[in-house]
Every structure is written in structure tokens, then in C-alpha cells.
Image (tube, rainbow over all chains, first blue to last red; front, side, top):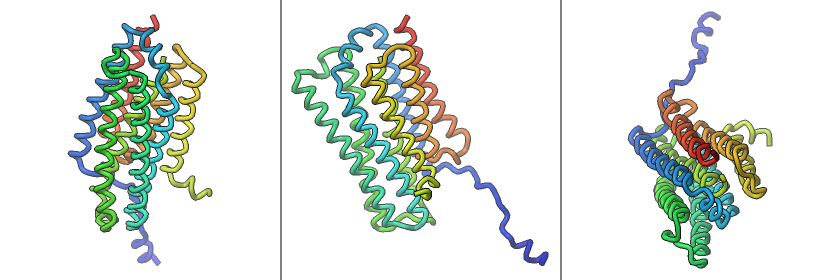
Length: 198
Length: 89
């Protein structure tokens, strides 16, 4: 009886662990600091041009911005489910999650292209005024990060198709997922700042 | 259906959808000024924190990484708040 008691599992709190690879997180931090500077530049440039910023902000397609937010948070959610599936050694569900995340990214890009197209159609460009200079630089810089995130997802998708990740090793998948979530996190700040706050 | 709510990632996603809807609505009604700015920053903070803790899974990471990411959110929110506060004066 006492012998049985000794082999019963003891609840040990899981060790603190950073998902993915450390250098990827260092890169993510650097990217985020760069965006922090851009966001602050926008906010402080607005101080001297409040009326102008408020006026031109009204011309932005808020619905497109909000739908794009929904696409990115949903894309992030699919990728989290993919990581969870890989840990269960379910590669099929993992590649499905990554694929759906990729599609959300593609939807984001499509809406953005439509948004830029309608601005160009109205004769509004980067050089139109200070507000649009910020609008185009911030959103386009983020747009490039969405593309890079999708390249990462495409690679992860191919690797999950080969069952490269599982309970034995999920670091690569976690690292790529973290980058994709960063793209989501940046838009969560960018959308209210540029499209809504006044 | 209740199994759906057992996964914290699913709960986080639902909150993110509702919070995005709230910001969208604030924009539609033309909310402006101190109260609106504080509300939007608070919503962005809640959303950002969910992404950091539940999606990036820093909930169970060494404290320094949690502090770095959450600190970034506080820094950005604080700078935006400061700039808007100056602009309202």
C-alpha cells in the first residue's frame, strides 16, 4: 500500500518556459521598439496639427480598418490552435490552422490594397499632407510585416505538412507563431490610433 | 459547446472580437475627447495583453519576457496618452 503511494505522480508546477527560440524574440522586441517610435511620432506630430489630423482621419475607411482587425485577431487565433494541435501530434489540424491563418493574412492584404486604391483614386498620396504621410508610412510598413509574416506561415505550413513538429519539438512553429502574433499586436495599437482616436 | 470555452485561446479570441466591435462602435458614433481616448486606449491595452499572454503564450514564460512585452504596451499607451493630453490643452 505504501509502495503504491510512492509511485503516484506528484503535482509539480511546470517550469517557466519561453515559447520558441530566444533570437526570434530579440528580433520581435527590436521590431516592436521601432513601431513604438513610429506610433509616438504620429501622436506627437498630431499635437501641432490637431485640426488637420482630425479632418483627414475622417476620410479613412474605418470599416476596412475594423474588418482588418477582426481578420488579424482571427488569423492569430487559428495559429494558436495550430500550435496546440502540433503539441498533440496532430499535424493535419496544425497545417489546417496555419493555412487558415495565412488566408486571414491574404484577406487583410486584399482589403488594404482596395483601401490604398480608393485613396489613390481620390488623388490622395503619401505627399498630400503630414497626416497622409503618417497614414501611408505606418500602414505600409505594417503591410510589409504582414507579408513577411505570411512568408513565415507558408514555410510553417509546408513543414507541418511534413509533420516536422510534434510533442518532441515545436520550437520552430512557436517562433513563427510569435512573429505572426506580433503583427496582430501592432495592428491592435495602429487601428485605434490612426483610424479612430481624436 | 462548453468544451469550446475550456480553451483559454478560444475565450481570448471572443473577447478580442467584442473589444474590436467596441472600438468600431466608438468610431461610428464619432466619440472624441478625453473620455473616448481613455476608453480606446483601455480597450487596446486589454486586447494587446490578451495577445501577449494567451496567443504569444507569455503567461507561462520567464517573468522578464512578460515584463518586456507588457512594458512595451504600457510605454506605447503612455506616450500616446501624453501626446493626446498635450493636444487637448
